[in-house]
Length: 130
Image 1 (cartoon, rainbow, N blue to C red):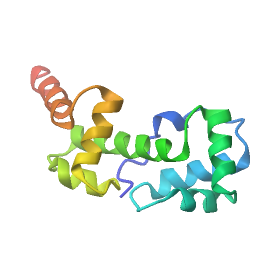
Image 2 (image 1 turned 90 degrees about the horizontal axis):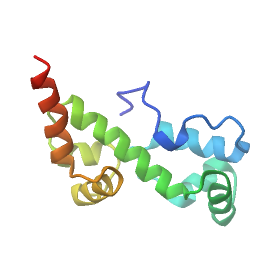
Image 3 (image 1 turned 135 degrees about the horizontal axis):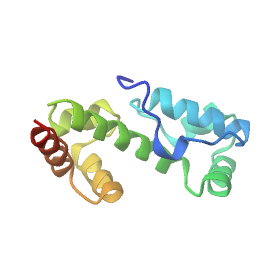
């Protein structure tokens, strides 16, 4: 599903001084974001307990592992919204959300607008460039 390999999830950029466990968790998120990952899966990838992984994330990244996963999924979904004509529901499933509603809610939470509006804005900008 990683159709945009150059895309880096926003919270994951420029984190050179992170503990190895967080780097391992980030790699798991970046390469497996479309899979049905749980906190247990991310903790396993980082070789940490779930509680310790959450503490590390809060301390070093000011977020939680699942929030990072959701943000990564939203970022990839928005990229697909802007670059393809796929239905919002199809995009939601492709990037790992269990439902289009969950994707839409997370998208609106992160970007302040619905997936439909993000697409309209992106495609409208393309039309005005012509």
